[in-house]
Every structure is written in structure tokens, then in C-alpha cells.
Length: 305
Image (cartoon, rainbow, N blue to C red; front, top):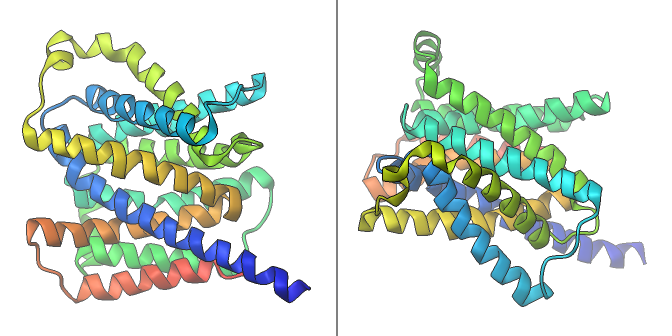
């Protein structure tokens, strides 16, 4: 009987791994789209447009598939408000602000820090040591991501970081901190809520918080019409960068836990570089192949068992 039960569980986990890998792929594309949008919109307007539209799509999906949003308890309302503040409002403000200050490749490097930050924060909160296999897997995946982003010149990258740690880097450090809070709170906030309902409530709260700040952007920024290219980038950010990956990410947090789910974000810079090579015709060297292999190996090691 135990062997019979193990097959559905293994199959379910395999599907979640595939979805989390696709989440990383879709989020890798947000660096290209985000650079385009940040060239025409302020961080506040860009974040509001992205999640305002995404919230409408999520509301339609939750109404179509689940009959509408479930009522929240007082505790769930507080948790969803914190999710909206951390993962939607603050993260995206810092994300778009960083993209206006520094190249997408450097931004992607900071995203690779998310799993370590989540794992360390989770361990400190729970007063527990992480399994050695998970620690090794996270470190291997992070090393691979650094190799990919640095083009194999890790020493040069670290020297450059020490010499030019400016506003963009500070924005991305703040973004990493926001994502840590979003991921760790996600498991507590889910409870009886489905991943789709949780993602919708978080997006709704986050959009409302962003809307409160719109007067600070100025009328000219808010009413400015985007170009055709920017419009396509916004559509991608809404569907491919928000609606689909947010629901799948919540599914991973619920099933695998926040630390193991966050490890998959190490794949984001790998896919970001690969998409840059495909879309922008940038060369792919040995560092991409070696680093990408290390990232995949690290993710696999961290999720064993």
C-alpha cells in the first residue's frame, strides 16, 4: 500500500518541479520586459500597471474556476495585506527602480541571492539548522548563477561589486528582503485558501497599496500612453510574469515549503541570460553552459527527498 501511495505523491511533486522551473523561465523574461517598461514609466506607475491589470485577470480566473474570492478571517486579512505589501508593492517598486539604475544582468545576480536569504531567515525564525544537503545544493546553485552572470570572470565581478555598490544595488537588496518576507509569509497565509485565491488576494491588496501612492507619480506620468513595444512588454509582465508564475509559486510553497521552493529562483538568471541571447542575439559561452549545469544540479540536490 505504501508503494502504491508513493506514486501519486512523486508524480505530484514532479509536476510542481516542472511548474517551478517554468516560473523561473517566465520570471527570467521579466528582466527584458522590465527594462523596456522602466524606460518609459516610473517604478510606481510600472508596478501599478503590472499588478492592476494582473489583479483583474486573477479576479476573472478565480470567479471562473472557484466561483469567486473566499471570505477572509481577520488573521488571513492581515497576512494577505502583508503579502501584498511585501511581494507586490515593495518588491516591484524596488525591482523597477533597480532596473532604471543598473543593467538587467546585475539585477539578476541579486535574484540568485533569494534562496539563501529565504533559507537563512527561515532557519533563524524556526531556530533550526538546515539539512546539509539543502545547504550544499543552495551553495552550488548560487555558484552556478554567479558564473553565468559574470561570464566566467567571478573575481572581476566581485571586484566590480565592491567598487560600484550604488542605488541600484541597494534597491535590489531591498527587493530581496521583500521577497524573503513574501515567501515565508506565503505558507502561513495559505491555510485553507487555494493558490489562485491567495495570489488574487495578495495582488488585490498590493494593487490597492500601489494605487494610494499614484498621486506621488504626477498626472503626466500616470496619463502617459505607452508605445507599442512597451505595451507588449506590459502584457508579458501581466500574464507571463505575474498571473501564471504567482499561482504556481504558491503551489510550490504549499507543497515543498518556502526554502525548497525559493531554490528555483536560482534558475531565473540562467533563463534571463538565455532569453537575452535569443532575443538580443548575445553570445552564449562556456560560462553559460557550466553555470547553468551547476544551477540545475544545485536545485536538484536541494530538493532531494
